[in-house]
Each structure stands twice: as C-alpha cells, then as structure tokens.
Length: 477
Image (cartoon, rainbow, N blue to C red; front, side, top):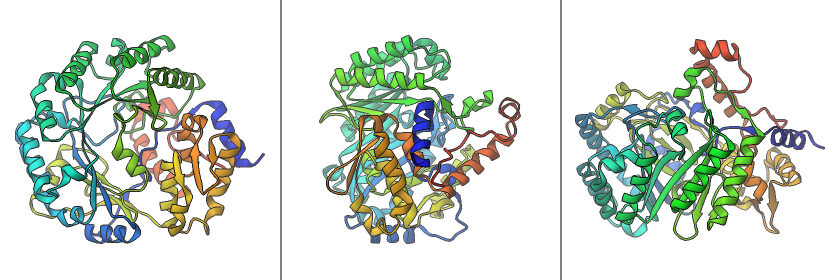
C-alpha cells in the first residue's frame, strides 16, 4: 500500500472533515501583490489561456443585519441606507470601469452575493441592472442564471423587493436556513430567521414564482442529534426547493464561533452517517446530486456559476471583499479582513477609479492544474490540462489519482476523463485537500496561526500551536 493510499484511507476511516473547498487557492493564501499586477494585465493574460472567452460575474454586497456564528465571509454589520446608496454608486462605477473586460467575453452567469444583498432597496437593484444593460446590453440573452443571496427574514420583511428582482431577471435565490429545528437555528445565531419565518419566506417565493429556490442545511451544530438532523432533512424535502445544499459545520479562526476557542477540524464518522441519510432522502424525493454538497431537481435547480467556475470559467468579482478567479492571478482589491473602514475606502477608491489588485495569489501552470483537480474532479477531462503541462507534471498528481482510484473515490473512463464515484462525492473534500500544494497549505496555516495567536481563549483551549486548524498533512508533500 502506497503512503498516499494509506493516508487517504486513514483520513476516511477517521472521518476527517476539512473545510468545503469552493475556491483554490483559499483566501487565506492571499498575500500583498505590492503593485506587481494591474487589472488589465491579469485579464489579458487570462484571455490568452482560454480558447473560449467566457465570464462569470460576481457582485459582492457585504452588508448584514446580524452575523452568523459559523460565517467567515467578507461581511460587515450595517443597515445604513446612506451607506447602501454610496456603495451602489461605487459598485456601478466599478462595473463600468471593467466594461472592456466584460465585453470581451460571453457573460454566462450573474451572482449578487454577500452579505445579505436582499437588504438593499429595489431602487438599488434598478440602478445595478441598468448599469448591466449599459455595459452588456444582451446579458439577458446570454446568461444562464441570475442569482442573489438572501435571508428568510429579508424576504418576509420586503417581499416586493423579491418580486421586483424577478421582473428584472432574477432566476435563483440562495436562502440560508441551516436547520428547521428551533434550538439549532438559535445556535447558528439566526434567531431572526426562525422556523415560522423560514416557512413564510418559502411561501412568498412560491407565490412570486421564482424559478429556483436554493436552501441549505448544516451538519454538526452543538446539540444536533441524528434525530434532529433527520427532522430537518425530511421537513426540507417536503418543502421541495429546487436546490438543496448540505454542509458540514467547519469553524475557521476568523468565524464568530471561534470566540469559543474551538475551531480545529472535526473527525467524526457519525457526521458522515448524517450525510448518508440526507443523500438517500433527497434522492428518494427526486433530487440528483450536483456536487458533494448540492442536490437539484433535474432541469430546474442547481448552481450554475459554481459549476462553471469549477470547470475553469473565470470569475470577475466586483465590490468590497469580492475575489476574482482567473488563470493568471486570483485577487482582491482590498484585504481579507472585513471592516466598515475598508468598505468606506472601497467606496472612495471606486468613485475615483483608483481600485487596484491589493492581495492575491499568482498562479503558475502547476497551481492552475491543482486548482482544477481540487475543484473539478466531479467530472474532469484531464486532456484539458495539457495546455498547462499536465503530462510533464503528471508525477505530481498521478500518485493521488491512483490512490483515489484504488480507494474507490474516482473512476477513469476510457478517455482521459475522471469522475467521482458515490464514495468520491462523500469524501470529496478529503480528496481535494490531497491536491493542495505545500505552498498553499503553508500560507493557509500561517494566516490562521496568526489569528490563533491573538485569541487567548483559543490558546488556552487548544495550545499555542494547534495541529489541526489548517489543511491535511499528506504523503505527497
């Protein structure tokens, strides 16, 4: 048995639960770019590497009414309408400043994320979509989905905003619910979105005839039991949203829950049993599995921007805290630490056309290959990676692929295509971490170790240098 196969099998046997990999490299691996790259050069280089010029557009609205305990995304607490006005002016200015980049590619998806962008007024979205009309007039003909993030309470409080968004072109709303058990909802810090509010929001969305309602559940909240998990799964299946995501609870050192001093990766085979229950229940209810975390009604649900991004279609992220993913540099125009001060700085610099890449990660050919392997083993043609030198670098990746095949996580088709097996879907995040480069794991650990040093309660609870706050130490390093 090879060292890598042994390592992979051991992680699975122990029930290791690393964070869900939705991007590579992770935000924690970003470091100051020190003016070495400008936006035009980044996207010009990306265009050279993609034979089919396409684009996902992500627009970030960082404002929230409250902070969820597990969240480590770029969010700030604010309900100041004057701030919202200034922010939307800035975001629309930034969109216009990127007109040439957007117009040079076929626009595939638009996603308004956050934060809680549904806190904005309909007039803000009128302004936003008018700007999109100006920059890319035929976007309604080319895009495959237009999506927004929202909370149940924001839908209930302002149902007319949702109706107006649908008229503007909205096709999907991601409504975070996390649980349908009252105690677990409170544990998540979502007291304003209780079970009654959740059900009311779903009713409003159905009345407005939104094509794709996307919801989620989280496994592993304190106090959650197998019985309470089954209750949430069964109740959500009965509500029948078009898309359902199920996530393992992972707490990183920059999440609010980290104040408890506990954020090491879990090892819990019991939680994988909860995955099995949800997997069987949703498939029995007519869903198909789109990823390790997501189920959809065939032909009606799904999360197209995520699928396309995993397939290598670049993503232009605009707004404070937004990340852009390219084949040359992944970058942000600010730091990775959210604050109202930085949001104000973003507004000023956008207004003055002064935004530049501040933090990021420069991708060489090896890291581009790793990005696709980390994200896209669901269904990946390895031949697509030859233009980045996959065959010459195969010795770096084939040992992991061979181990994954031996353990039963992937299958190889007669061509160069690999696909995850049902077990591969289940343990996808373990496999993904096996493809991380040592450099990215080291940067990730350095970042989170720095946060750990500033958390006295965590140091008392976990020690000065905890072993399991970043990555998986694997045999191929």
